[in-house]
Image (cartoon, rainbow, N blue to C red):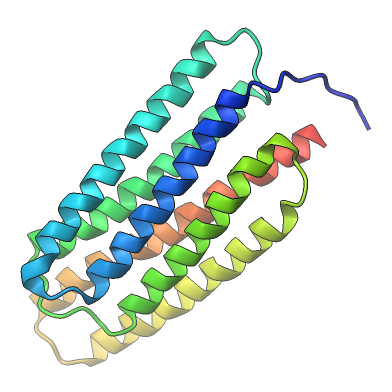
Length: 206
């Protein structure tokens, strides 16, 4: 096994830890949105937008740190990829919220809350894992669990789409709800992409 001398640069790990905590806050808001009455949705989405903006700030600080550091704790391209994929998750969560409000969706499927629960579980797994990049130890169970959760989100998505098409609802309602569900399912995929990026880092550094 090759030995790599890497600087600790604790600020990188602190920033990724902050990014992970933002994911959890955003996922809790998606969970809240899934069961919020229509009159309360706009307020939840506004809070979600604030979290997404906070995530953008963390991403910018990570990229600035990369660009101003002579050496980094792991490959620059992997830092860029990980930061970008975390940002993608937040963007998709915000987009799902925006669609619920902008489309004035009249009733989300009951299983939407289950998808939101999956997003929260995967976000919590991610938030717990990111600080452990410092040691690169004990992370395999993280990406295995996130993969399992993504498969669960896929199953729920397929069930809801099937129910939606069999519901007899008008085409406009079906289109609105499907776009929201598509975005939530994409957020679950994006969380798996974060786990893939972590796995890549660990493979390179081990």
